[in-house]
Length: 499
Image 1 (tube, one colour):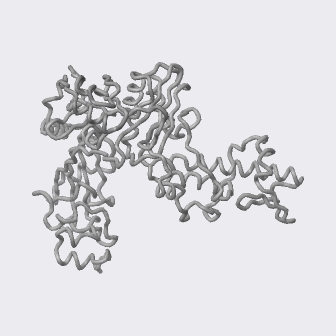
Image 2 (tube, rainbow, N blue to C red):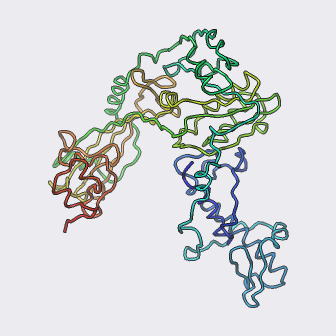
Image 3 (tube, rainbow, N blue to C red):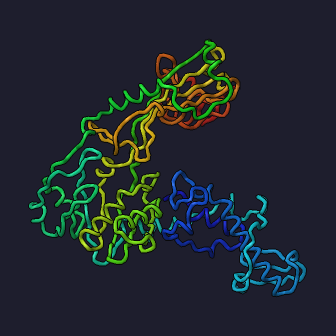
């Protein structure tokens, strides 16, 4: 996915194992949650950069256990205590005599030994690879074109499909006339699937031509008239309700009620498309006794379950081949593009690659949810605006739609996959205690504001993420964002000139 997991995760094992990292080969695990599930979530699905942080201890213990087993095998071979042995990359060494045995000569005997459940782990000063600069293993094959992404998959006899979808989320085909599309040379099949009408052809461009020739009408459903303004109004009303308390430290409400220098501001975040570089795609081949899927998925376990559900086959008869991903960001954890491929292949009786266009990706994605945030802060005197240590109390009221299938939409027609509602439980509150350190503004898309609106003095710094360590002001690109002359001088080259 671009996170470097093909390098970092084997680095962890190789470090504790004392293996030669240059000789380590990494294979992509097949879909099998019983063997390869995330130890923290129990699912073979990944998002939120969870690879290293969820597997760190498990991988360290695996490497350390294998190392202990190899040392025990060497101790048995030499008839010496294990305590007299040490390892270097790929070999076990008897310290007093200097005898050496490569791991390869010990592996068969080591495999017969019981696996240690609590092996001794290295201390940080003993790390060979962890925390060190290591060249990524996947960079060369991505540069030279050897890496296989979802769009690169080729299967003998494969057809290409493009799917026409209802412009309103949750809508479905009412009628469609395929006569003109079928007259286009190369168009093989036109079938209705869950997410729309699939045009199956011998090439992508032929499928696109057939799709454009379709004449379809749609059941747009109740969401056809839902607007962004209505959604915002629902969030605004929800934010006025008590909601669920997500976090509370100290007595922030009392500090805010005491008056003084209190500032209140509202920040709104729009729906955001993931916009992966590689548009959604998947290839499937459904047979009578098996189903094979090739996809750039973050959720191979979920893809396997989807394939089994659609085909009616046992889960173990569904094979998922995970390719490289041209961007994921959580979007590829969804199953809509997997369902497209499996249903289409099942309908036409041949292997099919379903390819989305860039327009499909933007219009029919799983958008990151819009939010409506009400912040109220109490500051110590007038210095609170300039010094984060002046923050006495902070209260945040958040309204967003909590639903796994996030609210999605496009310009003019914005709506969720299911029914839209903002329940009394939707808003959340976060309060910080008086006297605790904090930051006076949210970085990223939110910025900071005065009581009358966005702060005009720092209006050019709202989208910057880097903070000056001395004065906590954004630095770096400030001079290109309309900051005042004294700000440009103070933060020139990223160094604050504050005494």
